[in-house]
Length: 296
Ligand SMILES: NC(=O)C1=CN([C@@H]2O[C@H](COP(=O)(O)OP(=O)(O)OC[C@H]3O[C@@H](n4cnc5c(N)ncnc54)[C@H](OP(=O)(O)O)[C@@H]3O)[C@@H](O)[C@H]2O)C=CC1
Ligand SMILES: CC(C)(CO)C(=O)C(=O)O
Image (cartoon, rainbow, N blue to C red):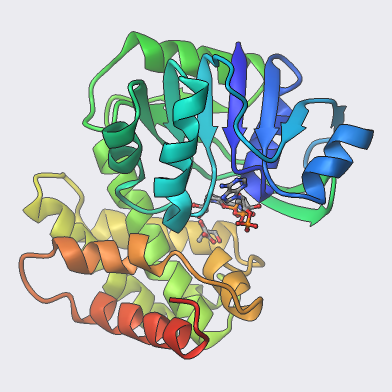
């Protein structure tokens, strides 16, 4: 398969690097990472050891691709959609966090857009090297649920590269459960400056559980079967499994960079029929910090 990875940062480089073991992969990212991959190839360290030589570029080439895998931060999705038009991909798979990425991509591209969730942990440690900090899995399927031949063939391509993959008919529920995990963990850990594990039995766990329960309520308002217990249980499970992690939002705040708050807590607030006070507060605090820093 010819695969274009748009957003060769941490997760895009990891999945692109793993895919390059079985497919013809082109990474689209930034220098100096792209330059180094061109000169020396891409090293995958940590949970995997690989040295691969994908093509790498800073702009989408005007060539046809079977699959475009989108791995930019959620606020860059509109730009990704515009840029991917040049590659005319048959299928597009978002592995991003947050809601709305698939809709943004589908509204701009003449391709079958698949929803995806990834629990792999990835970190670009230096140009040309990506560390897999946790083996996880990818779930993918049509964003509105159900089955599709394209989802099956993308799933088979990922499996051929030894990426643990589930082709799922219930992506709406999975995306909302992942949203509950991120709404519970990300802003709370970023504001409290704690690792994920601090939410398991520490005082910061309470707002995390309440935020996740609000997500479950909003999901049910929208016809998605997600109980409070399932959402809260997912937060506790992930916080336990990733206890030593600094969440991506905590890392963004520590690096003084823009966060994905709009696509996570903000998306919950935007969709709620009634007040979601915990998510409203978390979104307001992180947005306030971003404004103060001139990041929005
Ligand atoms: N890292 C992880 O372990 C996980 C990440 N995710 C999700 O995956 C998504 C990506 O996360 P992550 O990999 O950590 O983010 P990164 O910021 O590491 O990677 C995104 C990369 O895309 C680049 N980029 C953005 N726009 C363009 C463009 N127009 N052309 C070329 N390159 C571009 C960015 O460069 P620049 O910064 O210079 O704009 C950056 O290098 C997020 O939604 C995240 O929540 C989900 C699960 C795990
Ligand atoms: C699952 C979790 C919370 C792991 O840290 C994550 O997705 C993130 O940090 O963005």
